[in-house]
Every structure is written in C-alpha cells, then in structure tokens.
Length: 113
Image (tube, rainbow, N blue to C red; front, side, top):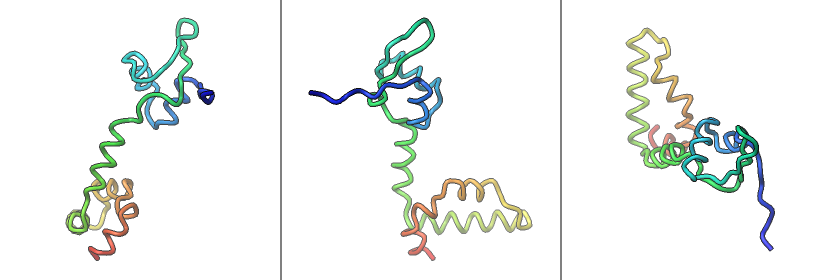
C-alpha cells in the first residue's frame, strides 16, 4: 500500500520550495505540480509532487563550479572596489557576503588564502 500523500495549500507548496505563490500557480496551470481545485479559487496541492525551483538548482550548479582561483579574483575585485569608494561597502561586496559563497565554499577560500 502506498503512503499517504501530503496535501497542502498553494502557500504551503511555495514555502516548501522557496518560491512565490504565483510560481506554484503557474506550475499548477502547466501540470508541473499535482493539485485539485477546491471551489472557484482554491487548490489542494500534492506537496510531494512537482519541481523544486529550477532557478535554485541552476544557481547551486553554478556555485559548485567556483574554484579557489575564482574566490581569489572575487576577493581582490571586492577589495579594489571597496578601496575606490573610501572603504564604504560596495553592492558587490554586500552581495558576495549575502550569497555566503565564502562560507559555503570554505574549502576553496582556505586554498586561496
């Protein structure tokens, strides 16, 4: 006997996948995720069906290709940008920190240091 399906709302599916509710609705319309209409405007979504956000998967694959040389070049560029702005954090440096690339790829930053 198969296990019970986990059912939830569009909001539940969006939260689990880290995407917007409109993305989940788009997946429902395209048939990428299983859902049943309940009433005129609501859906019950099979939380175990459908894709994980393909943009996140692509981003993760891209991050996996970062080398120690890439990290060194990015650090150098961030440092030069910061210096040129008198030590004010640049958008580049802030984005680099937000991405957490150096923490997720600490094995690379140790080699580049």
